[in-house]
Amino acid sequence: MISAPEADRRIDEVFAGLTLRIDSQHASLGECLGRVLASDIVADRDQPPFDRVAMDGIAVALADTHSTPADVFQIRGSLSPGQQTVAAEAFAGSDCAIEVMTGAALPQPWNTVIPWEDLEPSNGTGRRLRANAPFSPGLNIHCRGSDYRGGDLLLRSGTLLRAPHVHVLASVGCSAVPVLARPRVALVSTGDELVAVEAAPGPHQIRMSNMPALAACLLRAGLPVGTTIHSADREDELLRTLSAALAASDVVFISGAVSKGSKDFVPAVLDSLGCSRVFHGVAHKPGKPLWFGTSPQGGVVFALPGNPVSSLVCFIRYALLRLRRWGQSPSPSDLRPDGVVLPLADAVKAHPGFTLLVPARVVERAGEITALQTEKSKGSGNYAGLLSSDGIAEIPAQDRTVPAGSPVRFFPWP
Image 1 (cartoon, rainbow, N blue to C red):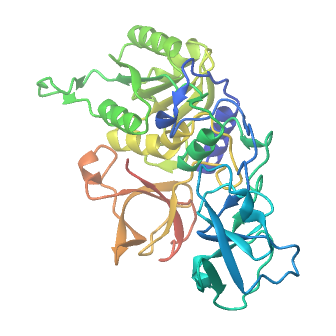
Image 2: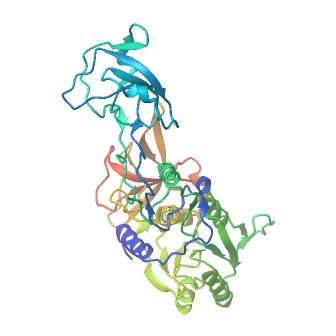
Image 3: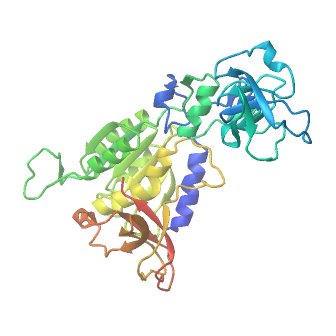
């Protein structure tokens, strides 16, 4: 049995080495959020592509940084966004100015923009400075190429696309975005006692809840499930079921039959199908029997405990955020799929040998989340006991009580 931090390290190592498929159909700009970029994006021209007016006002020409603008400027024309030229007579004289609007392309020799707030009306068409404020060339001008130059690398392959990235993609004319294919996900449940949700269970049976819960979480994360299969607790049937799931999927989740009982066939069947075990058993509660490994097809396999709370907790803690970032290049601020870090509202008793994954609810004051209030676990089979919680607080393994105010990782429910 390995520690939770070691499980993280091993899972991350496997995910970093996956061979990922590029989607054969590029995503549109309106559909690319949350997808992972499949190739580098390079600037096709300077940005801004011209000296861009950054404030409404007047444009003047200063010879150098030591120049003093005239006290009164005569406005000889105007320039608005999208306009390419200005009247030639506007260039005559150092006291000549043109009215400019934000976003306009500023031609030479104009090199300084004085905002309207620093001006007041004078005689005729002139404008007088309100005060002798310092002015220098380049003032209130978004200079050509100051954001980036043509040929610059703007986005690297492996970038998880968010709203600011769409601006950049649009600015370089990338209307069809090359993205990685979303992982093909299969869910396999086991257990002779389980019946379909819509079925009427017998006195010795229960409706399956693990698979619908996991499928809903995956769909919310933009990862629709391709295959859902239920297998009886028979080794031959499980062999056929898992063989089909592994062949058709990049990620397989199995619920149940992963511990040490006489009908817990999953570890042995996975081994017989050529899967490579990375670990089996993690020192955390609940969910100790968690199994993780790789398939011979190059995918990953999570075999989750069958108890509903253990299944959901392990899925949220180890799998969901990693799948949402499928193929994403790690960055210094995002090396692991950590949960939110929040302080504990009260002291919590830790366990020296096990990381505790306990239900918790957020404490709000003045509309802001300020702390976590942990709740007593009601057993790994009591999923109704999670209803009053907002997610899972992770209490590290240690031989002392974790005091109130201590920061801990929090994994909210989807």
